[in-house]
Image (cartoon, rainbow over all chains, first blue to last red; front, top):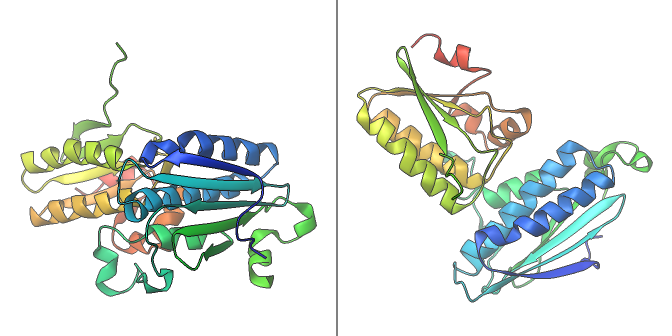
Amino acid sequence: MLSKTPKGTSIVLKSRFSAVEAVCKRILTALEAENYSKDDVFAVHLGLEEAFLNAVKHGNKCKPDKKVIVNYSISPKRVEISVTDEGKGFNPHNVPDPREGDNIFKIGGRGLFLIRAFMDKVKFNNTGNSIAMVKYNSNDLQGHCGSKAKKNHE
Amino acid sequence: MVPIKPAVSVQYSGKATVVTFTNEKILEEKDIRTLQDSIMPVIEQSEQINLVLDFQNVKFLSSAVLGLLLRISKKVYERDGQLRLCNINRKIFEIFRITRLNKIFDIFDDLESAMAGF
Protein backbone atom coordinates (compact mmCIF):
# COMPACT_ATOMS: atom_id res chain seq x y z
CA MET A 1 0.00 0.00 0.00
CA LEU A 2 1.09 3.53 -0.71
CA SER A 3 0.20 5.65 2.30
CA LYS A 4 -1.35 9.04 1.61
CA THR A 5 1.42 10.85 3.44
CA PRO A 6 4.60 8.98 4.32
CA LYS A 7 5.30 9.19 8.05
CA GLY A 8 8.78 10.36 8.79
CA THR A 9 10.35 13.67 7.95
CA SER A 10 8.42 16.61 6.58
CA ILE A 11 10.18 19.64 5.14
CA VAL A 12 8.71 22.86 3.78
CA LEU A 13 10.88 24.26 1.00
CA LYS A 14 10.94 27.48 -0.93
CA SER A 15 9.53 27.11 -4.41
CA ARG A 16 12.73 27.46 -6.35
CA PHE A 17 14.56 24.79 -8.31
CA SER A 18 17.69 24.63 -6.17
CA ALA A 19 15.78 24.31 -2.90
CA VAL A 20 15.55 20.53 -3.13
CA GLU A 21 19.32 20.01 -3.29
CA ALA A 22 19.98 19.65 0.45
CA VAL A 23 17.05 17.35 1.20
CA CYS A 24 17.85 15.30 -1.89
CA LYS A 25 21.41 14.84 -0.71
CA ARG A 26 20.18 13.84 2.75
CA ILE A 27 17.80 11.22 1.33
CA LEU A 28 20.37 9.76 -1.07
CA THR A 29 22.98 9.54 1.68
CA ALA A 30 20.48 7.73 3.90
CA LEU A 31 19.68 5.27 1.10
CA GLU A 32 23.36 4.50 0.61
CA ALA A 33 23.67 3.91 4.35
CA GLU A 34 20.75 1.47 4.12
CA ASN A 35 22.56 -0.44 1.35
CA TYR A 36 20.20 0.51 -1.48
CA SER A 37 21.76 -0.27 -4.87
CA LYS A 38 23.27 2.47 -7.01
CA ASP A 39 20.44 2.00 -9.49
CA ASP A 40 17.88 2.49 -6.70
CA VAL A 41 19.65 5.66 -5.56
CA PHE A 42 19.75 6.97 -9.14
CA ALA A 43 16.03 6.23 -9.54
CA VAL A 44 15.09 8.03 -6.33
CA HIS A 45 17.30 10.97 -7.28
CA LEU A 46 15.55 11.21 -10.63
CA GLY A 47 12.08 10.79 -9.13
CA LEU A 48 12.61 13.45 -6.49
CA GLU A 49 14.24 15.97 -8.82
CA GLU A 50 11.58 15.58 -11.50
CA ALA A 51 8.71 15.74 -8.99
CA PHE A 52 10.18 18.83 -7.37
CA LEU A 53 10.83 20.56 -10.71
CA ASN A 54 7.23 19.84 -11.71
CA ALA A 55 5.97 21.23 -8.39
CA VAL A 56 7.92 24.48 -8.78
CA LYS A 57 7.29 24.98 -12.48
CA HIS A 58 3.85 23.55 -13.23
CA GLY A 59 2.29 23.47 -9.74
CA ASN A 60 3.46 26.74 -8.24
CA LYS A 61 4.02 28.42 -11.63
CA CYS A 62 7.48 29.57 -10.49
CA LYS A 63 5.94 31.98 -7.98
CA PRO A 64 8.63 32.61 -5.34
CA ASP A 65 6.14 33.13 -2.50
CA LYS A 66 4.80 29.57 -2.83
CA LYS A 67 6.08 26.54 -0.93
CA VAL A 68 6.72 22.89 -1.72
CA ILE A 69 6.37 20.25 0.98
CA VAL A 70 8.54 17.15 0.81
CA ASN A 71 7.69 14.22 3.10
CA TYR A 72 9.87 11.16 3.22
CA SER A 73 10.35 7.98 5.17
CA ILE A 74 13.17 5.51 4.71
CA SER A 75 13.33 1.93 5.91
CA PRO A 76 15.73 -0.86 4.96
CA LYS A 77 13.07 -2.17 2.60
CA ARG A 78 11.60 0.91 0.94
CA VAL A 79 11.72 4.65 0.64
CA GLU A 80 8.56 6.65 0.29
CA ILE A 81 8.54 10.30 -0.78
CA SER A 82 5.74 12.74 -1.43
CA VAL A 83 6.04 16.16 -3.03
CA THR A 84 3.17 18.61 -2.61
CA ASP A 85 2.80 22.03 -4.21
CA GLU A 86 0.29 24.85 -3.73
CA GLY A 87 -1.08 24.68 -7.24
CA LYS A 88 -4.54 23.74 -8.48
CA GLY A 89 -3.37 20.27 -9.40
CA PHE A 90 -3.80 18.37 -12.64
CA ASN A 91 -5.15 15.10 -13.94
CA PRO A 92 -2.14 12.80 -14.35
CA HIS A 93 -4.17 10.59 -16.68
CA ASN A 94 -4.34 13.43 -19.19
CA VAL A 95 -0.58 13.62 -19.65
CA PRO A 96 0.24 12.32 -23.15
CA ASP A 97 2.77 9.57 -23.75
CA PRO A 98 5.98 11.41 -24.73
CA ARG A 99 7.05 8.49 -26.92
CA GLU A 100 3.99 8.58 -29.17
CA GLY A 101 3.92 10.26 -32.59
CA ASP A 102 5.16 13.82 -32.73
CA ASN A 103 5.34 13.97 -28.92
CA ILE A 104 8.80 12.48 -29.15
CA PHE A 105 10.03 15.74 -30.71
CA LYS A 106 8.43 17.94 -28.05
CA ILE A 107 10.77 19.83 -25.76
CA GLY A 108 8.99 18.89 -22.52
CA GLY A 109 6.53 16.40 -21.09
CA ARG A 110 8.88 13.59 -20.03
CA GLY A 111 9.25 14.23 -16.30
CA LEU A 112 6.22 12.32 -15.05
CA PHE A 113 6.85 9.54 -17.55
CA LEU A 114 10.38 9.08 -16.18
CA ILE A 115 9.13 9.14 -12.59
CA ARG A 116 6.71 6.33 -13.41
CA ALA A 117 9.43 4.38 -15.19
CA PHE A 118 12.07 4.64 -12.48
CA MET A 119 9.98 4.46 -9.31
CA ASP A 120 8.10 1.33 -8.24
CA LYS A 121 4.86 2.99 -7.19
CA VAL A 122 3.48 6.41 -8.08
CA LYS A 123 0.21 7.88 -6.90
CA PHE A 124 -1.42 11.32 -6.87
CA ASN A 125 -3.91 12.78 -4.43
CA ASN A 126 -7.38 13.61 -5.71
CA THR A 127 -6.50 17.26 -6.28
CA GLY A 128 -3.46 16.35 -8.33
CA ASN A 129 -1.08 18.65 -6.48
CA SER A 130 0.69 15.93 -4.50
CA ILE A 131 2.65 13.00 -5.83
CA ALA A 132 3.66 10.03 -3.67
CA MET A 133 6.40 7.68 -4.85
CA VAL A 134 7.86 4.44 -3.53
CA LYS A 135 11.13 2.71 -4.37
CA TYR A 136 11.98 -0.70 -2.94
CA ASN A 137 15.48 -1.65 -1.91
CA SER A 138 16.54 -4.11 -4.60
CA ASN A 139 19.40 -5.26 -2.36
CA ASP A 140 16.95 -6.27 0.31
CA LEU A 141 17.47 -10.01 0.60
CA GLN A 142 14.01 -10.60 2.02
CA GLY A 143 12.58 -9.19 -1.17
CA HIS A 144 14.24 -12.12 -3.01
CA CYS A 145 13.78 -10.84 -6.55
CA GLY A 146 14.18 -7.12 -6.00
CA SER A 147 12.00 -4.18 -6.73
CA LYS A 148 10.72 -5.16 -10.16
CA ALA A 149 9.29 -8.40 -8.75
CA LYS A 150 7.56 -6.46 -5.98
CA LYS A 151 6.25 -3.99 -8.53
CA ASN A 152 4.61 -6.82 -10.41
CA HIS A 153 3.15 -8.50 -7.36
CA GLU A 154 1.60 -5.58 -5.54
CA MET B 1 36.47 35.46 -5.91
CA VAL B 2 35.41 31.95 -6.83
CA PRO B 3 36.36 31.24 -10.45
CA ILE B 4 33.37 30.49 -12.68
CA LYS B 5 33.61 27.09 -14.27
CA PRO B 6 32.41 27.07 -17.88
CA ALA B 7 29.45 24.77 -18.50
CA VAL B 8 31.07 23.29 -21.60
CA SER B 9 34.45 22.98 -23.23
CA VAL B 10 34.69 23.25 -27.02
CA GLN B 11 37.34 21.56 -29.12
CA TYR B 12 37.75 21.62 -32.87
CA SER B 13 39.19 18.34 -34.03
CA GLY B 14 39.43 17.68 -37.76
CA LYS B 15 35.94 18.03 -39.22
CA ALA B 16 34.29 17.67 -35.83
CA THR B 17 33.36 20.18 -33.18
CA VAL B 18 33.38 18.46 -29.80
CA VAL B 19 31.38 20.04 -27.00
CA THR B 20 32.03 18.42 -23.62
CA PHE B 21 29.69 19.05 -20.71
CA THR B 22 31.85 19.89 -17.71
CA ASN B 23 29.32 19.47 -14.90
CA GLU B 24 28.41 16.17 -13.24
CA LYS B 25 24.79 17.19 -12.81
CA ILE B 26 22.58 19.09 -15.23
CA LEU B 27 19.28 19.80 -13.59
CA GLU B 28 17.50 23.08 -13.45
CA GLU B 29 16.38 25.74 -15.88
CA LYS B 30 19.36 27.91 -15.06
CA ASP B 31 21.77 25.10 -16.07
CA ILE B 32 19.83 24.51 -19.27
CA ARG B 33 19.85 28.20 -20.20
CA THR B 34 23.59 28.42 -19.57
CA LEU B 35 24.23 25.40 -21.79
CA GLN B 36 21.95 26.70 -24.50
CA ASP B 37 23.67 30.08 -24.45
CA SER B 38 27.03 28.32 -24.73
CA ILE B 39 26.21 25.79 -27.44
CA MET B 40 23.89 27.64 -29.83
CA PRO B 41 26.54 30.22 -30.86
CA VAL B 42 28.96 27.37 -31.61
CA ILE B 43 26.40 25.90 -34.00
CA GLU B 44 25.65 29.27 -35.56
CA GLN B 45 29.31 30.02 -36.16
CA SER B 46 29.86 27.14 -38.56
CA GLU B 47 28.18 25.95 -41.71
CA GLN B 48 27.13 22.30 -41.70
CA ILE B 49 28.61 21.63 -38.30
CA ASN B 50 29.63 18.09 -37.33
CA LEU B 51 28.78 18.39 -33.66
CA VAL B 52 29.66 15.80 -31.03
CA LEU B 53 28.22 16.24 -27.54
CA ASP B 54 30.44 14.43 -25.06
CA PHE B 55 28.75 13.29 -21.82
CA GLN B 56 31.90 11.84 -20.21
CA ASN B 57 31.56 14.02 -17.09
CA VAL B 58 27.78 13.80 -16.72
CA LYS B 59 26.50 11.50 -14.00
CA PHE B 60 22.99 12.84 -13.64
CA LEU B 61 20.56 14.87 -15.71
CA SER B 62 16.93 15.88 -15.60
CA SER B 63 14.35 15.52 -18.34
CA ALA B 64 14.83 19.22 -19.13
CA VAL B 65 18.18 18.32 -20.70
CA LEU B 66 16.39 16.11 -23.20
CA GLY B 67 14.45 19.15 -24.34
CA LEU B 68 17.68 21.08 -24.76
CA LEU B 69 19.15 18.25 -26.85
CA LEU B 70 16.10 18.34 -29.11
CA ARG B 71 16.50 22.11 -29.56
CA ILE B 72 20.18 21.62 -30.39
CA SER B 73 19.32 18.84 -32.81
CA LYS B 74 16.76 21.03 -34.59
CA LYS B 75 19.28 23.84 -34.93
CA VAL B 76 22.01 21.53 -36.25
CA TYR B 77 19.78 19.86 -38.85
CA GLU B 78 18.30 23.19 -39.98
CA ARG B 79 21.85 24.13 -40.92
CA ASP B 80 22.48 20.79 -42.66
CA GLY B 81 24.85 19.63 -39.95
CA GLN B 82 25.17 16.39 -38.05
CA LEU B 83 24.78 15.71 -34.34
CA ARG B 84 26.21 12.79 -32.41
CA LEU B 85 26.23 12.01 -28.69
CA CYS B 86 28.87 9.93 -26.90
CA ASN B 87 30.16 8.67 -23.57
CA ILE B 88 26.68 8.41 -22.05
CA ASN B 89 26.80 6.28 -18.91
CA ARG B 90 24.54 3.28 -18.47
CA LYS B 91 22.00 4.90 -16.17
CA ILE B 92 21.63 8.02 -18.29
CA PHE B 93 21.35 5.90 -21.42
CA GLU B 94 18.41 4.23 -19.70
CA ILE B 95 16.68 7.62 -19.70
CA PHE B 96 17.21 7.86 -23.46
CA ARG B 97 16.03 4.29 -23.97
CA ILE B 98 12.88 4.64 -21.86
CA THR B 99 11.87 7.84 -23.65
CA ARG B 100 12.89 6.26 -27.00
CA LEU B 101 15.16 9.20 -27.71
CA ASN B 102 17.92 6.69 -28.38
CA LYS B 103 16.08 6.19 -31.69
CA ILE B 104 16.18 9.91 -32.44
CA PHE B 105 19.79 10.67 -31.54
CA ASP B 106 22.93 9.06 -32.94
CA ILE B 107 24.57 7.73 -29.79
CA PHE B 108 28.11 6.34 -29.77
CA ASP B 109 30.02 4.54 -27.04
CA ASP B 110 33.04 6.85 -27.08
CA LEU B 111 34.44 9.98 -28.64
CA GLU B 112 36.63 8.13 -31.13
CA SER B 113 33.73 6.23 -32.66
CA ALA B 114 31.54 9.35 -32.63
CA MET B 115 34.13 11.28 -34.61
CA ALA B 116 34.76 8.53 -37.12
CA GLY B 117 33.27 9.11 -40.55
CA PHE B 118 32.79 12.86 -40.42
